[in-house]
Image 1 (spheres, rainbow, N blue to C red):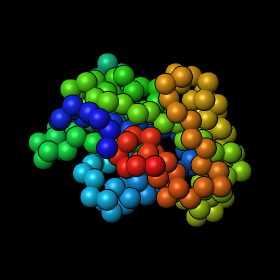
Image 2: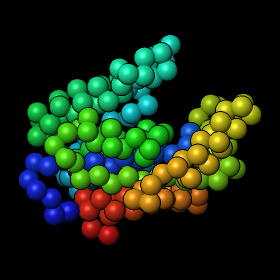
Image 3: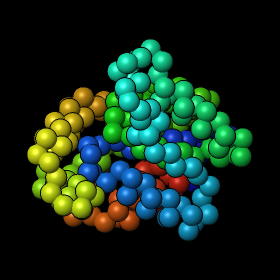
Image 4: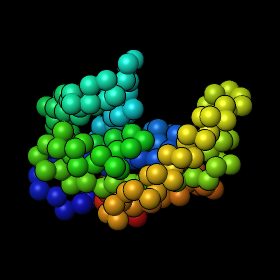
Length: 181
């Protein structure tokens, strides 16, 4: 395990384009950690401010995702958890604000999951049960480019092409120090 002060939160921020496998990898990591009896929580960040009109557009000053993260995490902390897997497309760009919402000066590992356009299109197609609208794939591609060029050097890039979710999860567990390599 990572050498961390007792009680200090450890957070894995998983970001990446739509269809890269964030949720699937988080589930595989959850299963891996459960199997090793490593206490943790998983929060799917994309739903923390999912509403219409979009709160981050209509009321950006409210920071609803961060507020909801703080509330959810406090419930896990009350139960004794100190490790968090947090998935969200742009979490790797907003890791400072999200870490502040977690509180207690967390140890942060930020990872950008990457995948090629063909692989992403196939994954999105499976998710939607058919053909992916070209606008959705184009948005995913633009997001991938934006994330890859805008993230700080402290973010680890992990390619998912040709790897199973379990292989990626093992890599992430090693990166965080939650399981040995």
